[in-house]
Length: 227
Length: 84
Image (cartoon, rainbow over all chains, first blue to last red; front, side, top):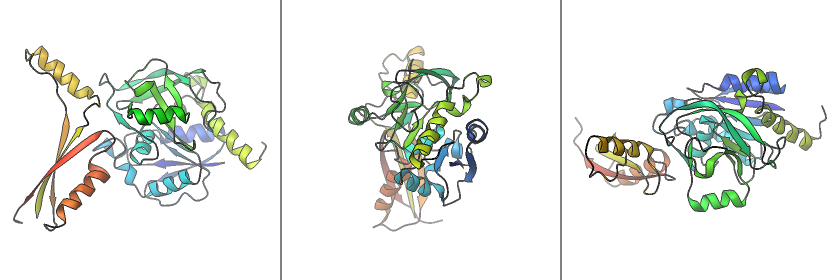
């Protein structure tokens, strides 16, 4: 399986994402600059964290119009796994690939520490390696992770089981403690916590590696490849 | 040539953490009468266009990029100016 890590001007978790996939997961991965227009030959797309375009105007608002985003939308529509972490999540929201928007954290602080997440849905291609209700430790690092959606959207998210991760303690004021959601089809996941920073116990937690393994497991089952 | 001011504000009902912090600060300064503060943005654009097209153009820019319709409302003022 071959992953693309999209690099925007201002991305700063691209190296961690690359390391997680290449060295810890053991899959193929390449950086793709935001100016590119094709994602041909890639089986999965990773949008890393950072401060793309300095977070000017709104987080993710400008990156969403990068040339590569057309190819990201096409990959999403083709059913390929698309994962956006932190700023990557914000870009997916601005691009309309996921519903809702981000507000400043309720306490106005940049929160940077490991947090406990609860796995709400393990029937996605991103979470099949977890147990429902399992508590995992993954770091967050954001100032705007206060997820917002209106009540009708929240009802839809619940009805379609699109809420994958919630915060055990709601650290930033998010609606229903939401930390990560998928699109309706289930192949696009956005999450504020950083699984790529939790891929080795030396880093404090290896709980995030399960997410990457889940993607690979799903892909192998689909392509009937045994390792 | 047109000078356009675009104002974006968080929709009513969307919590504004910055506004809440400023409200508290004003209360600490003794301005107890302040009931609410909402913080938004003002953008000043200079646009080359024509009278019949300018409004549609500004609306399009607001919908596409300048405002996020999920959480923000926008309004604008358009003023024709003589090019310098």
